[in-house]
Amino acid sequence: MIVEYSYYPGCSLQGSSSEYDHSIRAVCRALDIGMTELDGWTCCGASSAHALDESLSILLAAHNIDLADKVGKDILVGCAACFSRLKFAEKAMRDEPRRWAESKTAPSVGIVHIHDLLCEDRIMDKIKKLAVKPLKGLNVIPYYGCLTARPPKVVDAPNPENPQALDEIVKALGANLTPWSRKTDCCGGSFAISKTEIVRKLSGDLFEAAKHAGGDCIVTDCPMCQANLDSRQKEIAEERGIPLDMPVFFITELIALAFGIDNTQKWLAKHLVDPRPLLAQKDAI
Amino acid sequence: MSEQIIDLDRADSEMLEKLRTRGVKADACYQCLRCAAGCPVLSFMDIHPNRIVRMLQFGMDKEVLTSKAIWLCASCQTCTTRCPNEVDIAHMMDVLRQEALARGIPCPQPEVEKFHRAFLTAVKRGRVHELSMLAHYKLMTRRFTDDMALGMEMFKRGRMKLIPTRLLPTETMKKIFAKAKEGD
Image (tube, one colour):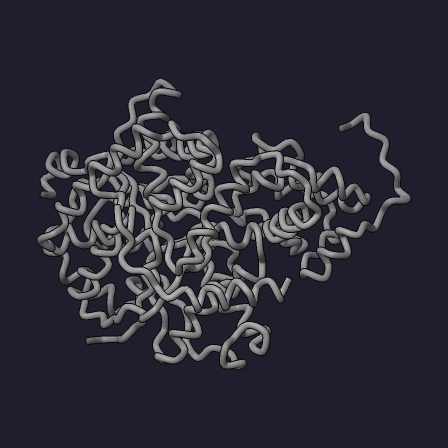
């Protein structure tokens, strides 16, 4: 085991995005990254708490940092929204520990997003070694969305307009990294249910740009982005009169594919746009 | 908008002061329009974000608080990231939504508010069970047939969990919600 983390899956990863959770666990196991699910974790409040109630938004996320603080291990997060809310709470707890932290002192633990961990040199070396089935010929569009990049002062993003983590991983897996100009544009995530016309507009623009750039597929590390992009393609295609059939992967699914992890195809079968025909065409499965 | 007479005596509004206490320096804006230029939902908004800031500087609190725009902000944080004067516009939108609710202003985008309320009701159980939350939202909005086909597809592919993993003790959540009330 290299390191030990308290793993915070979050609600989506226990429901509609379970393949992200499963692939994170499998990839971390393969990379010998030790993690234990944070016992008693609760919802971070997502985009709804901060829209309606600021104190609640901090307290909901802070509770989980309090729990991790007692365990004494940094929190590893896969969901971009949970990561963002935990970072906001962490900053508040450091600024005003007496108000927000149960211990009344600044937390001893930090918040780590899975893509930053995977990009650490020692782990990247391991990824390159374990990628025994390189994803040759697959044109992959790296899509970060909003919440791991912005606001940089809160999420500590060194390069908010042009993040590199997914790019580096895609390259390490032997795929063709496909550059485009909308890496961090919003997909309309917070309106996934309540304002689908906004999702269709924003996600539609992303797909047109991804196609224009020559991408076969999109890779992301946010369950909201993945769900939006994977599920709205049929409507977008009808509305815009364009053909659209672009698989949207979680980064850990691509890593699992390149590692040759057994369960990968089972996870891919849950996608609404089935990635398996594309992967078969590229000899990746 | 361009024909409206603005009463400058209303300047330095109550809202501007409230934003100051919440760490948003809306008075620092010099209308560079970077927020509007980068805003992904601009075409859906009735008042553009830069104008919201300007209107607050003119004391037009009521106009701002009744706008659709504050509910259509996607919280993507692009404006906050790019503002050269460090006006935290995304945070400003949160404060404006919260103030509109506190003043009892009916939300002009009711489905947005109802979704947030359905979500927060679900949070009270500790973790959000998506299917229960969606059912609650549909009851609140009476939009039963929206996304039916998509829901069935997701169900078929095992993306909809029928039963929550486990019920967590809600004492913790009760305490958190009660403490949040004190803090407001």
